[in-house]
Amino acid sequence: MATSSPMVLSLLLLASLTALLVLAPRLSPPPQPALAAAAGEDAPTRPAAAVGAASSKGTGAGEEADDLRLFRRAALEATAAAASGKEAKAAAGPPKVAFLFLTNSDLTFAPLWERYFAGNSALLNIYVHADPTSHLRLPATPSFRGRFIAAKPTRRADASLIAAARRLLAAALLDDPANAYFALLSQHCVPLHSFPRLYSSLFPPPPTSSAAAARHDDHRRLPSYIEVLTGEPQMPSRYAARGDGAMLPEVPYERFRIGSQFFTLARRHAVLVVRERRLWRKFRQPCLPEVAAHECYPEEHYFPTLLDMADPAGVARYTLTRVNWTGSVAGHPHTYGAAEVTPGLVDELRASNHTHPHMFARKFAPDCLAPLLAMADTVLFKD
Image (cartoon, rainbow, N blue to C red; front, side, top):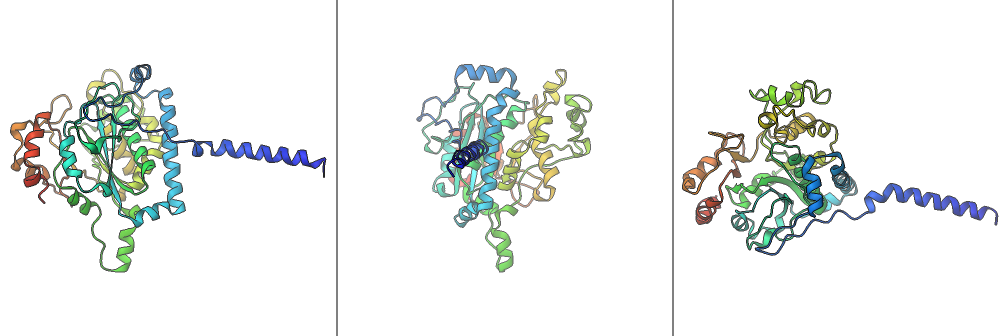
């Protein structure tokens, strides 16, 4: 017995070390989101050296290591929560809407969003990904304080926008298992209806029959509101933007899709996005230099292509965010100015050919804040 004790202890030590190595990613603390500065101060930024290194390559492999850890942890915890019943416990309370703000400039419309969120804090969460190379200043609106996540530089028409959206989704998944919908917005977005109207549209009252009510209560069946289009004239050149055959075999042309980069995803699809690797390896490739300025918009293709491949029946195929592409300039949609902000414009932007009206709209210039606030209670939030 005395001679076997060291052997038993050695085996136990080896088993403990093995378990520690396997579980280490799960046991390590999550990356802590950067805290927003006090009102009127600069928003948080990364150290200058890190910013310079990241911005030079956008979404380089070295920069992605911490992202991969974040995405893996978010996917693992969401899966574990679903298996252990943690999501079911969260569902016993009211489901929440996670508002994901992706910005590289000041949150000019924060006072309007503050009015929108007022009185509904138990039904929503807010997360902000602010480009650390931009020096943002926040107005005196409490809802955005402490809601900034660890961010990296983003560039227009670049896969860094996809990575930023995935970071927001991962942060929201880790933060609250009650987050059932995830609405991606920009600093130029404004609400077109009240929050109660959005909430009742996303979570309609349960049907009367018990069987239908049981199906209704299963939040895993909620649809995602993301635009999914095919046959658009710009798709052939967009598909070939990385070179002939660059998207194969993962993304054949007939499965390539296009849509707005702003979406409202159900929780199961948010988990899918942060877990996915296969398509991401294709869409993160840089476009050819000669077409990059005109044909490279991966953020408009990755999400609709992925969701249409993975769960075509689970998406509504339209977005809740209205964008006006009439008279677009250099790939930018029409930007509304203060003189255009009228009740008639709000009615026009709300109109939709789908089940739900548009709940948000973009793109609005900063001088639109005053007229929008003036009509907030009488027009915007009067449903």
